[in-house]
Picture 1 (cartoon, rainbow, N blue to C red):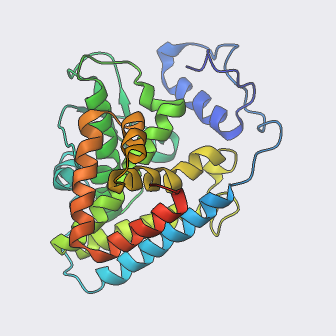
Picture 2 (cartoon, helix red, strand yellow):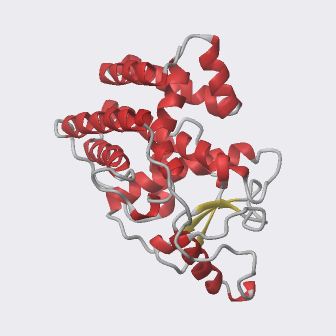
Length: 299
């Protein structure tokens, strides 16, 4: 993937890549075709106006969820154990699987960043989740691992049902944009279903996560350094799930065609069915979707 990319300078991202390679002693010296760590050359485009509107909509829904959470019971967070957190999230993920293995990775979370991947060898689908020392509270990690990263593992496993694809196309480029759109859509779905289940702490954390995704945009209230030169990736955490969920709720052929083009088969159908039921059971979700359909122009 790196060899095929025409990127010459990667700034902070290339520096992290080089540090990761150094940890793998058998990988040898850094190849000449690796991007160097100079600041990214050239202008970085601004965030699109439609994304700022999506950010306000998503953040507003997050604030509503946090207010609702204050009226719900406060459940006990799941301990910082990967298997337990993934198991908790099964009921809130529309196409849950357990076809993955967990491997210990002796690096900090910020160096590791993405911990879901496809690797050669077992299991049947090649899906792996890396266990790294947590920098989060048990509740934060419960949502991140049990819902968001769990959705990524489900997505990878679905695509690898005919045999592992290493690496998976969903780990890079356009595939990664689809993967993050799906994981964020599952987060929004999970937030509504946790409201219906009376999971107050989970609802509060899921709402806070939506607000954080809006604030961290380049130029936002709390811009995240990792996204300063990655506007397309930063945008997809907000606009991507709205496009998937409005397609799930849309009644016309255009919506169905869009959903099928982005998400395959059962993955799209299960998301659509669960989201339709969530909107029927929780009127604020239906109102949120009506605003999202107006924003995205969904039919």
